[in-house]
Amino acid sequence: MTRRKFSREFKIEAVRLVTDRGVAVAQAGRDLDVAESVLRRWIRELTATPTAAFPGNGQMRADLAEIAALKKEVARLRAERDILKKAAAFFAREAM
Image 1 (spheres, rainbow, N blue to C red):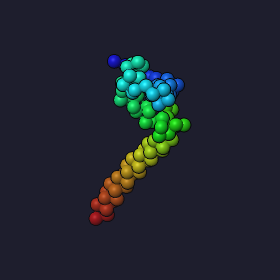
Image 2 (cartoon, rainbow, N blue to C red):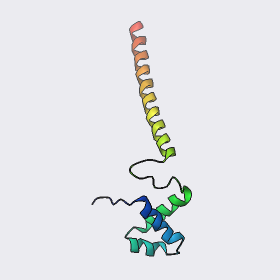
Image 3 (cartoon, one colour):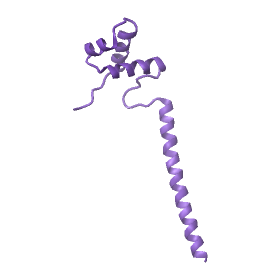
Image 4 (cartoon, rainbow, N blue to C red):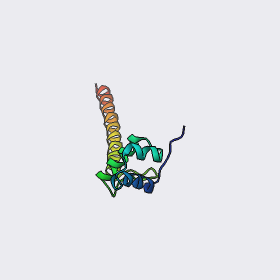
């Protein structure tokens, strides 16, 4: 089964259906053919960061993108450290 994709506008309207019009989350989910848990997550995302919610097209929020970049850098630095440790051990053995 392929994963369904919803536009930012659809998500915002779905959240407004619940928040502005007072429709129950369960009812709105059934009407829109969206799982109740998904609709609740959309509500959380939109209320937490209205401008950054639902960036779409695989784009990450700025804070998540920064965390991903930092994790990548940490992995690179650990690899460099491990290489240097091995080289130091090798040259220490050769010196003896």
